[in-house]
Image: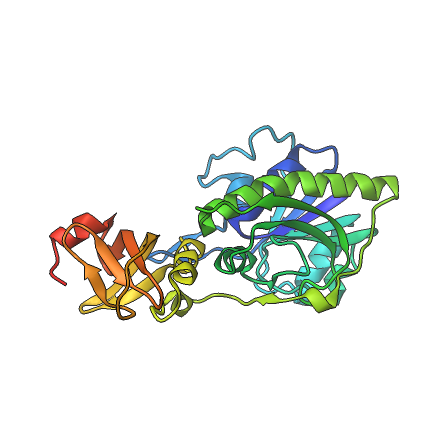
Length: 311
């Protein structure tokens, strides 16, 4: 089958590589335009583009790839020119994963067979832009990847198949992102095999079980010490690395990457220990903070941070 892959984020790279090596024909890749990134605002290619062509002028295509698909980077995928470019590729299937723009009906209807989306949750739970962080912050015990038939709604399409994994007690947003990225290729390739054989299931989502994980911004990482220790600890893990959990200190925000729950009590936000160990009270117990970064400084252990700062 002729495949067009549409994606931007790092989570889609293993799936792109799998398509490159598969028996299907990857005829085109659509990703976001290169954008300024980092403190220097250097123009940087999105991860999908880097994976396909490399980051240097003489870079090789994806390792093991027998061919290189064309790359398209429209500013807006709903523009007529972008739609015409995709239509000209005559795909049988469009595959979307972490693209960052909503696809209009005109694009969804291009492929001869279907448009599929790979979503990083067990739909209908955690529709929306930040399902990985939401699952950890909520204390879910499992999550996974859903392959669904695309419609014009927000992750509302019928389910083709799902692959589940357990969420570890120490899971962070980064580790769960990477684990989901690794199970996505098999889920997609199995879906394509079922479509080719003509026996792919189509299971409507139960709308009564749906909830949403909206797009996160930096302010979402602000910690509220009036919440329980368990709630705050989960948020610290969920928001590592993005958007980053933080609390306010005189002189700047303190980003917190890791903490453990201990059985101490005090006024929420009160620093209970501050010599070799940074312990902060919550609404019920306390958190021993172990890994931090003060605004404008490098990341360090809490013990190292305390040696250089009086609280």
